[in-house]
Image (cartoon, rainbow, N blue to C red; front, side, top):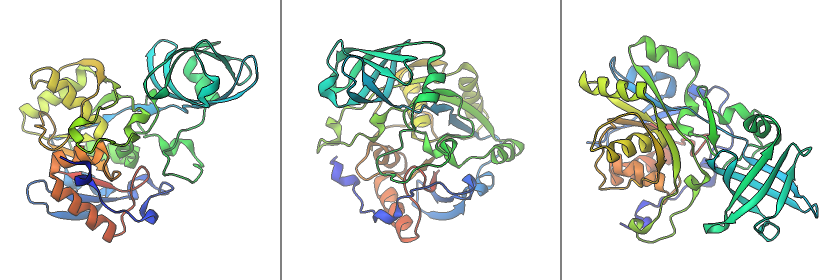
Amino acid sequence: MKKSDFYYDLPPERIAQEPLAQRDQSRLMTLERTTGKIGHQRFYELPDLLNPGDCLILNNSRVMPARLYGNKEKTGGRIEFLLLNEKKTDEWEVALKPGRIAKEGARFVFGDGSLKAEILQIIEDGNRIVRFEHNGDFFKLIEKLGEMPLPHYITHKLKDKERYQTVYSKKSGSAAAPTAGLHFTPELLEKLQAKGIKIGYVTLHVGMGTFRPVKTESIEDHIMHNEHYLLPKETAELIRETKKTGGRVIGVGTTSCRTLETVAHEHNGEICAAEGWTGIFIYPGYHFHVLDALITNFHLPESTLIMLVSAFAGREHVLNAYKEAIKENYRFYSFGDAMLLY
């Protein structure tokens, strides 16, 4: 398939620049996978659309303020780091600029000197592997020194950093939010559980590669970025029990979907506790092992995310739904509205 098969024209004014005042007031388009039938709801009505015995799988990764500004140790030259992936304790893959001052062996200082970094290796795409030196807890330092790395299409300044976090975010490590979860409130989660809908958690640390465009004309030639995931034992047991009793497994976001499908793909269709790195690329023709429904936001044209959604609900159904969403003035992308595909 060609990447142009997943193009649609989005008026710039449809890109949500700020979150709504109330998370669950966002709109929720429903799309029936087999028929293409479209419905229009509000996100707070989600409990009415699910059944007792269903389970929701949420990604509890927390976004780091992953953009750091510092200076070269010897010359004072200004540097910008963007943390991408933790390779091992205190070693990270970073994107940075300007690259000319970040040769192997170069050292940089951040803040009052409580955080330092040394360039270990220059890798593909010009990214670097760096080793950090610090006093105290690394992630607490990042919270203090870093800025939230909002997507490039959001030009407004975010007043409250927590609005780019889900209310259930727990494990720091993402460079971008799992945005489908931004619509949930603690009260909505309580209503869902009161109806008998179970909730399980996975962790997939979202890298900035999620915004990397598909550059190859044939999508099969695209190479996906890798992201670290964890599927705990209790979540695996919940999914198996849900399937056993006839409930639906509903992924919240493409990150939850990729985690579940990675584990099933690597374990002959079975779900079990697992941890590792995934570079799974899901596009039309993929056979889903776990997912029965998916909650997701509206994604960029020709992106790997719209390809994943098209694999789940059919390309023509999805593009028709996007056309309808534009016509009905839905809000798009990270701070925008949501879809339920079932």
